[in-house]
Amino acid sequence: MAGGFGNFVGAAQQGKFAVDTVAGGEMVMSIKQMRQRLNDRLQQLDALKVQAKLGNLPEASAIAEFNVLVASGDEQSLDYVLRRFAEALEEAQQALEVGMRNYAEIEAHAEQSFRRIGQE
Image 1 (cartoon, helix red, strand yellow):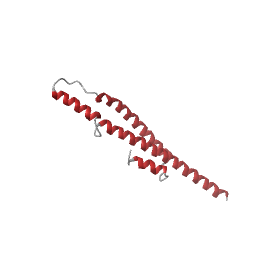
Image 2 (cartoon, one colour):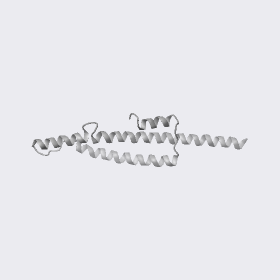
Image 3 (cartoon, one colour):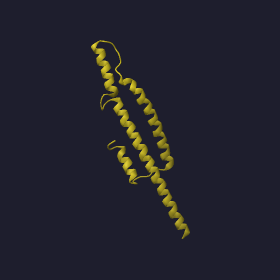
């Protein structure tokens, strides 16, 4: 996803932030749960992508076509929006995971520094 969490991932990869592993773990777990629920909804949405048989009247056909358009027709459709949201969640999860590794590295470095001080 251009912008948004993509910048967050890049910042994490550049070491611009770190996330405590406990807090980060909780956030990642919440994101994973949200992603699973979102995937379930996307599967349910597939049923709406099929034009319903509402009758032979022109109005019925127009309504059925409109419903398909709303579900999956363009960049304003529910399918498009939910898939972009899924991408953002994935990128947020990646950024948090990198941020937790950054935190672990900072902690390890600090621990080594304190050990050296103690040995002097």
